[in-house]
Image (cartoon, rainbow, N blue to C red; front, side, top):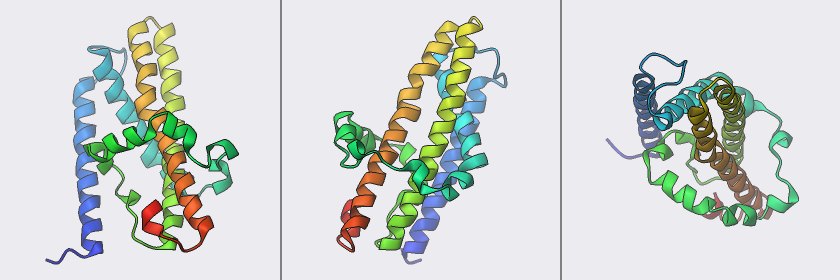
Length: 195
């Protein structure tokens, strides 16, 4: 079978679905069938609960964020050039993400060499950012509930896990949106170099 772009995209989608299923089964197993009260290793519990909440929100609301007004996700003037995100180490985070299995989660973040593809990529970044904002908010509320409810270690770990699982992915989407927007403003330019 030839390796056409459509064939490669189909493989990416299948790999993504398999990875999501494996992580979801792991998360359910790690929680041992009981979400509440928090139990076991606080880090494992936090990662498993984070995965389940994020995947549920992604599946339940992703289409809403993809269709949302792009102005909702507009960049502030101080973040358009991406320097603030470079200082925060977003390139290192991106490098790790792309070289780990987590880079497989969304197969739609691949550019297909056209201007219209950059516009699709902007919608994908909006979708991903919205899902991470909502999941982060839900999980911060759960963290506070744990802190107040007598599970301080689980609550603090849940708050710390927000950094790599929500804060950095949000920054990455905003950094990517700035790069794609610069390409679209330049005109045709080299779409693949920046996207």
